Amino acid sequence: MNSDEALQMLKDGNKRFASDQLIPDRKFKERREQTAREGQKPFAAILACADSRVPVELVFDQGLGDIFVSAVAGNICAETVAATFELGVREFGIPLIVVLGHSNCGAVSLAVKEDKIEDSLMPLVKRIRPAVMAARMAGMERSDPDFINSVAKINVKEAIDDLFDQSPYLKEMAQNGDVAIVPAFYDILSGEVEWIE
Ligand SMILES: [Zn+2]
Image (cartoon, rainbow, N blue to C red; front, side):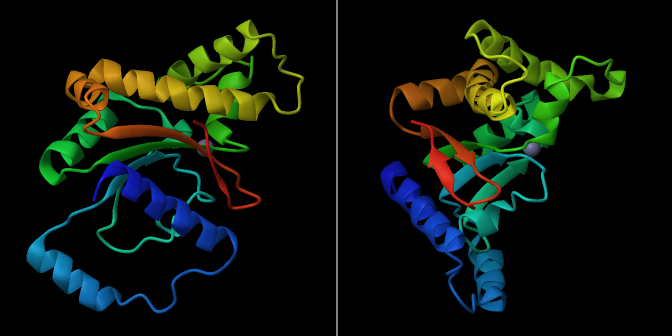
């Protein structure tokens, strides 16, 4: 499967999810046996938030062995996430990586706040703050009702930059067109994924 076909699979799956028409009666036992026997061949890797309202397999209506998921608050790309995706591409030939932000993100809200933040939460906040700065530089105000979602969208692109900084391999693969890296944004109310580019 190439990256265009993989992206179409995700788009189709999200349409089914958003309209409450998931594929019925997935055969998990059969699929467990098949993937245990033959190994996994996921067609996409997805970096998403840990938010319980963003269950990735459901959002894209995919089953066992279909997508390679990393979920971390604020969908930030820490070193271990970049290494995870590099592993997925090297080992399983994944043609598509999606970085999925979402509306009303708690981690983004935390990074937007000006209050003192616990030191132990700083590893999350530090990676989101550049997106907050970028939104402010673009003239957006914290009081703007859409500020958090605007920051979350910028944060998706920052995560892609972080992915490339930490994985020269994936950067080169993307430049050569051997893997597609796609930013996206999930609306927790409508269930729809907006493809940012
Ligand atoms: Zn979130």
